[in-house]
Image 1 (cartoon, one colour):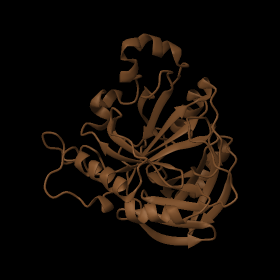
Image 2 (tube, rainbow, N blue to C red):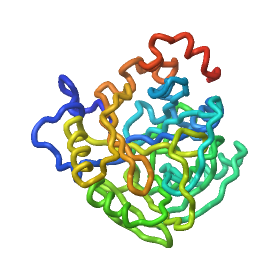
Image 3 (cartoon, rainbow, N blue to C red):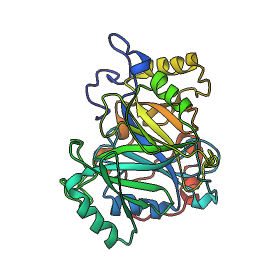
Image 4 (cartoon, one colour):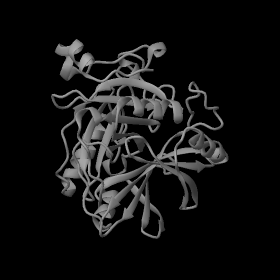
Amino acid sequence: MNSGEGSEEHGAHWTTRGMRMDPATAIKHHHHLTMCTGTAQEDYDFHTQLLGLKSVKKTALYDGGVPIYHLYYANDLGDESTILTSFPMRQSGRVGRKGSGQVSSISLSVPESSLGFWRDRLRDHGYEHTERERFGEKMLVLENPGHIEYEIIGITDDDRKPWTGSGVPADLGIRGVHGVTVSVRDLESSIEFMESGWNGHRTHEEGNYVRYEVGDGGSGTIVDFRIDADLPAGSWQYGEGIVHHVAFAVDDLDTQADVKDHLVGLGYTDVSDRKDRGYFESVYVRTPGGALFEATVSKPEGFLIDETYDNLGHDFQVPPVFADRAEWIKNYLEPLHY
């Protein structure tokens, strides 16, 4: 899922060549997940030291006038569907309100045979966890330091390549995003959205959970809906303790534009204009169940657009909104030790 594979002059994923994809079937798999966490240091240590992911970018939120870190973690090159990103919010003092209409948990794929390793690793690092099973998948459930629920799920058939530079062996490491769980008060409007607008296929039901998979299905394509009929709505603004949005990959900018037009044509008018996020281009849609989804096109250079491979994810990259205040933003943000 390397965003640069097959690139021509402007990148095969960047402009359309040949027949355009049907926008109703354009959503391929997860691209990245973005959550609002606690301190930058706790977040960095959790992802790089405990989970063994690679830091592939250190920058700041592209929106607003108050600097907030934006930290990216993934496999070696930050391939699509392996990327987790965080807005550490503790410095701002803003706290989110958990509830329905949000992503309630994120799940990561590991080899099924490695669950014992992860059980021991969580214990050795002082992380309490519970063990659950859903849709036949065994999982370890924990909270990160920013109060986001993570599920480490054992999978038998995931060939995505893990990052091994943090010391977790390849046969035990995290493969990437497995899926997300979205809390909704009722399912009907989400069914309509997933099936008519987001290339979703209903694959499983269990208790108050219903599973959808996009694209070709499998790990890295999953959206589980949990029906919480009596749960009050959670907050949508940036605030510690909530998942902000879930991004899904589409092939190119023309397809992305078609997806937006398709959604608007169905009546989903809460869709953003295209936004340049430095490493990819994004269009956001507020789903009828409340969660914020994103249709994303990777730039051909991916995370190497502003850093060499040898330095990838090491130095802080000043976002365009703060380009004229580079030294100020570096001094404003809390120091990050790595």
